[in-house]
Each structure stands twice: as structure tokens, then as C-alpha cells.
Length: 360
Image (cartoon, rainbow, N blue to C red):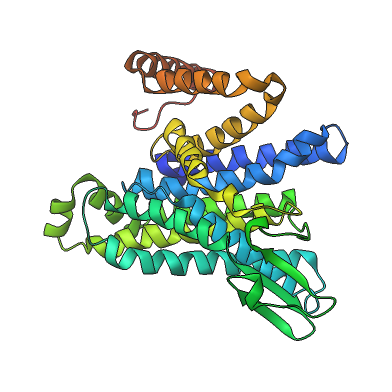
């Protein structure tokens, strides 16, 4: 046990899990005691979804070193496909939790499959081609879903790209109604399921980062030529990171979509992808705990300032600039390290223990 705790990566991972678990226990306790406002209760599931999105994108951007601007596209695929699957399984599976789980898994698999198809031609290229293609992919998904009609009636499942090509029988319902988006969605998402998704995302990403594949992915990020020279299949490892990231984004999208009674394709636009990327950058490239904290704080911040109306986005931009200056300033980093060493020395002094690596 002592050897495990002496490992820096293991300690960091345990701290990440601990922070998430403690936050969940606190918020769930406040929720059960009815001590949260209605607006805060409404933030809980979206926060879990955006934390999962930020962590999954950090795997691709921070760990793999590939810039993706279409994460909202994978999120949208998960959201709309999850709504359809949950509706189709309504008469088959009575449990809301199981239906939500099936919707999330299907949304993740579909997003991962499309990510794989996109990655086949793109990940063999170099430079910013991935950013350009994923940006185009996200816009294509938004426009396709915005013109898609999906419905269900006594004859079964129907899908078309216009209402003229699809007529539902009496009693039929539209699951996706073109520009109107998903309507009449049964709200199955819950905060505990969001917490489970966050833990799953952390488990998958952290284990991948600390595995042999993760070290190969980092090697590709740091020096592609050197990685190729020692026999690392650069395309294959980049593909693993891309597909895993897309899969987790699809699951988060399904959770997000099942939290609202209706939503449109415009919700998953380029701005959403940029917001998720901002969470990653401000939290620290490759810093998983930083992504968790930044996604939570930066999602709540603009929502909490809605009462300021026109000044809301201005103040949000100022906060982003200040955070960026604070986190990337060399002087701030130096002072932070000094404080960290002082706290560490004080801890060892109070407990009577010696630092790891110091001979007794």
C-alpha cells in the first residue's frame, strides 16, 4: 500500500476520485435536505455532462496533442440517438435507469463508430487537418439533425428528411421534428447517473493515460518522428484516443439530452465545442482534475450571472482572462510551488514522517 501511495500518478488519481466523490456526497446531501435552489438543482446533471465532455476532450487535446473542434457534434449524436433509443425501449424496459443506461451506451457507441470513420482518413494527416475536419463534422451533424424527422406510431419506427416523406398514423409521435429538434422527451437523467458517468469517464481516461498505450500516446504527442523510429504505430494510437474521446462524448450527450423535455440541434454548435475546449485549456492541458474543476466552475459562473443581463458575458470574459493569466503566469507558478513545498514540509513535521526518498 505504501509503495502505491508513493507513486505520484496514483496519488493524483486518488485525489481526483476523492474530490469528485466528496463533491457528490455534499451536493446529494444538500439536495436530499432541500437546501439547494431550483436553479442549482437544474445545474447538477449538465455539470456532470460537461465534466465528462471536458475530461474526454482533454484526453485528445491535452494527452494526445490533437486539436478537435467538433466535440459538440459527438455530443449531439449521443443526445438525439439516446432520445430515440429511450423512446423505442419504453414498452420493453420498465426501469427508467436501465433505459437511460441503454440510451447512453448506444449514444456512445454510435459517436465512437462515427469517430472511427472520420479518423481513418484524417488521422493519417499532419498539422491542423483534424481541427478543420472535426469543425466541419460538427456543423454537418447540426445541419443534418436540424432537417431530420423521426417518429413512431402503431406501424413502428419511421425516419425521413422531410415531413412530406413521412406521415404518422393517428396517435403517432415525433421524436425528432426537424428544426424543432427533439420534442416530448421523457426526462430520465438524474444526478446519481451523472455521477456514475463522471466516475466511468475518469476511470477510462486515467487508466488509459497511465497504461502502456497512454505512454505511447504521450510519446506520439511529444515527438512523432522519435515515436515512429521505435516502432510505435502513430495512427493506431491517435485513433484509440480519438475513438475513446468520441465514445465518452456520446454518452455525456445522451445524459445531457435526457435532462430536458425538448432541445434543438443548434444547442450543439461550434460555440459549444469552443466552450468545452475552454474548460480544457483553463483547467490545464493534460490535467484531468483541472478539467473537472474548470468545467464545474465555468459552467455555473455564466448561469449564476444571468441577472446581470448585458454585462454577464463581459464579466465572464474578464474572469476567463484573469484565470488564464493566473494559471499560466511563471511567477504565480513559482509562488504556488513555494507554498506547496511549505505545506508539504509542515505536514511531515507535524506527523513526524519523512519525505519519500529521504533516508531515515
